Image (tube, rainbow, N blue to C red; front, top):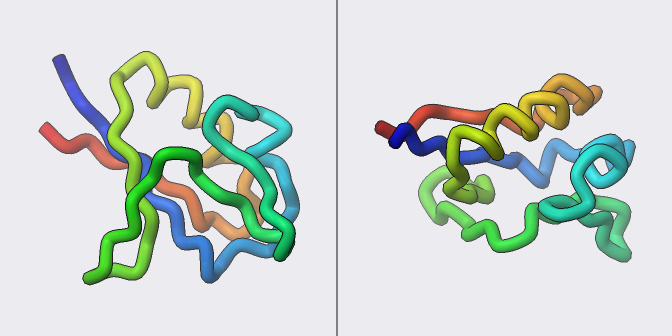
Length: 79
């Protein structure tokens, strides 16, 4: 089964909230006005948050990727 990961650059987030509006199960806005990717781990090398997801979730999250006005959310295939 193909695996994917969401890569999220929180530093670039402007707090539009589209991610949370489309996917409350994985996204929430914090008190500082930035989105948080639930369950993600910070990659110390890149400074970005990453979360492994399956193909079905990747299809759902493509809407989120397309809705981000600054493009700080990406999905990559991992295998």
